[in-house]
Length: 286
Ligand code: MF3
Ligand code: CO
Ligand code: CO
Image (cartoon, rainbow, N blue to C red):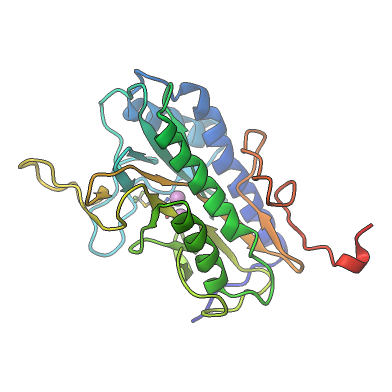
């Protein structure tokens, strides 16, 4: 495995791309209300990325091997959609939950992040799924420091989500990110402590768990006799699914979350305050 290590100006480039990706979500937040369509959200985001940020939506035309070119500037994954939902002309309804996943390219660097939105008033069950998934992402983030292993991250996420009664999607994972949208390493959201690649300062990857309220199995979304759109993934049992995503840098002492802006949700109480969770040695703490 060759995991790119970023230094100096490269990290600065990733900081900017990460902040811009987060600011797109900030900008969208007041618009995510009953009645708006996901296509309207897509247009707002694209115009902001291109005209305000001087960036490029990474997903537009993105075509990994075996996939059709992705047709939109972000992903909108609604209710039982696990990931890669394509914006369309259906209005959001009260009680929907939707993941909005934005990746901005700025000066060649990719910032990749997503958040959950509860449309209007969500059920207690829907809100709990979104909250537990947010916390699960952070259970992974706080494991990030030199010497830790990718398996530590996956294990922390899996045990937390499963103890809450939910399941972890296995088929999609976090990923290294930089000049390329998806690069090494793969960041599984399940696993065993002490296994897989050791983390080294300068690695940058996403942590983006997909957590299902029901069973973990997924399928392609083939509704009726429509042709498959090539992208949309749903839960096999049609239970709700949630996802959050941050882009994270391994620092000399811990982590720095790069997809941060004024509107970023605060970390949960179990995490250090802020987004640069340097692990201060106990002896040095005052
Ligand atoms: N942003 C997604 C991720 O977190 C990837 C979306 S690819 C698309 O990796 F083509 F579906 F947009
Ligand atoms: Co990602
Ligand atoms: Co993403």
